[in-house]
Length: 72
Image (tube, rainbow, N blue to C red; front, side, top):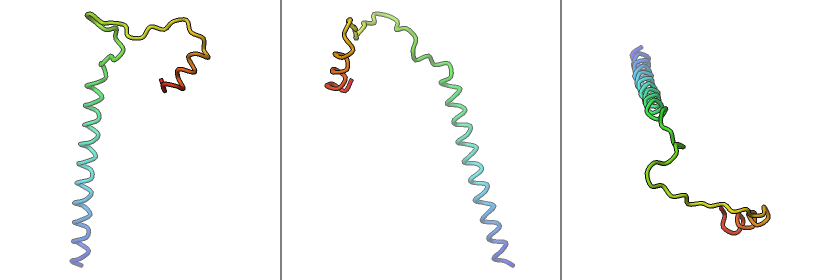
C-alpha cells in the first residue's frame, strides 16, 4: 500500500509542477502579445530618412536575371 501512495504523491507533484510551468508560459506569451500588439513596424520613417531602393522601369526579364544572379 505504501508504494502506491508514494507513486500517487509523485504523480501529483509532477502534475502540479507541469500545470505551474504551463500557466507561467501561457501568461508570459500573453504579456509579450500585449507588449507588441500596438507596435507598428511599417510606419513611415521619421527624421532624415533616405530612400535606398530606386526602381527604374525595367523589363521583367532583366529583373528576373538580377534575381537569379544576386538572389535578391
